[in-house]
Length: 103
Image 1 (tube, rainbow, N blue to C red):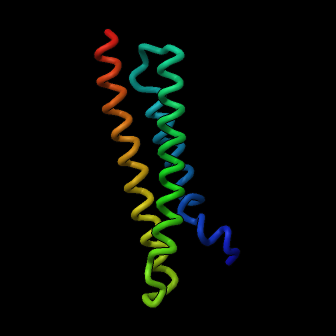
Image 2 (image 1 turned 90 degrees about the vertical axis):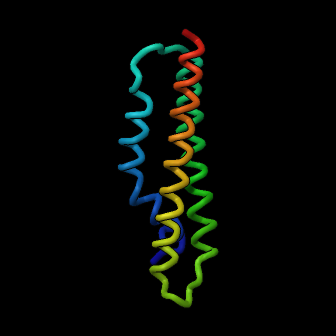
């Protein structure tokens, strides 16, 4: 397998699911919609993807290859998905608190 594909396999496989989660994060709640809200949403989505990519690269290189090559992919996928969800969950609650204060 191509080395670039191998190290980014988790990202390639999760992109459709991340797109769905990002669209849901962007769409709800429907109001208020201002420039600050859009910027916050874009930054939160970008930060979650960057954190995901960093974590899959870190975990891929940290995994012990003596247990088999697939273990690197499993660890990268599990850690990366957890990091992505953690960042998006944090952004969701920060945005909710921020929007509540703005009202």
